[in-house]
Image (cartoon, rainbow, N blue to C red; front, side, top):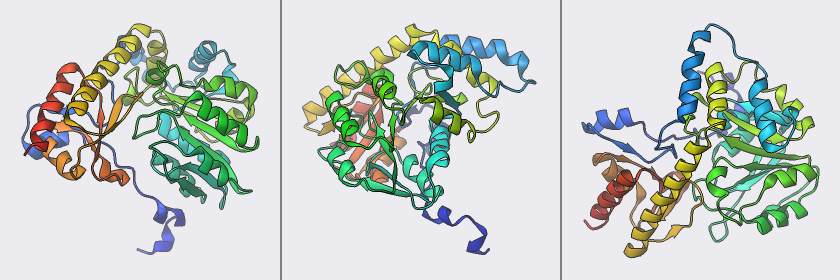
Length: 365
């Protein structure tokens, strides 16, 4: 088959590697019970109010969804003190990131991002013929000085994953303020805050809505997949200026968010109790892991997300495979070029303790 058949940019893309499905691991290793701590999913399950909303909506399966997701946008606007015209809803954060690149990137345009961060940023930019400019981390964090030094006339976008995936740490209010003050107004700043509800318990975590209100070329990305536990139906959203939202709306697709996703999100918005319990469990799980890592002398990155990044002083592919044999799925760091590191999602207390027991055995072999 001729290589000229396909869009030339596809040759530059590295497919995203998701966490292994539970069903696949059960089949591969002949296991009955498998714990998945690989994809930063909510171990308390979906919001009960989201479940109820979807059940009530099943009778309308024959009807197309609201193409504008108007009710959801109105509710989000009320929550964040904005207008519905400031909000774009998408089929999960990944689709929104695709829409952002399609909205802004022309061939040859540059987008600045960290060298270790969510890989979809680079892929979406490359797909549009743009150039991802990847700045190595400094002390495990975004190097904003390096970001600023690499700005030129081709720079269109700057991506800040906060907390950063896969490390889990935050850029503080002061650090974000430094970036904002030193980036020209015509460059679009994208704050990916998929783990916002976990991170905001940290008093040093910035409130980027305040930045948006002063700086129109700002996009804040958030999602219902994590803290509300409705990852399967795929719904995320951005808070931005009316002008950017209008242009993104031309790209997003007509029925990009299905009926069940919309009503599930509406239900989840009303379920603060579920969100509070999820955040509480998250930090309980993190504390258990941090305590053991401290006892074992393992280096880890302090997290304000629902996962932790830890150096196990052994190749992560080996540990990954050994854990799967024991019915536990995590994400090995070699996928990001961090050979001895693991990214482990938080779980229930029982799941967390099971992971740690098995990890100790593997490291002591």
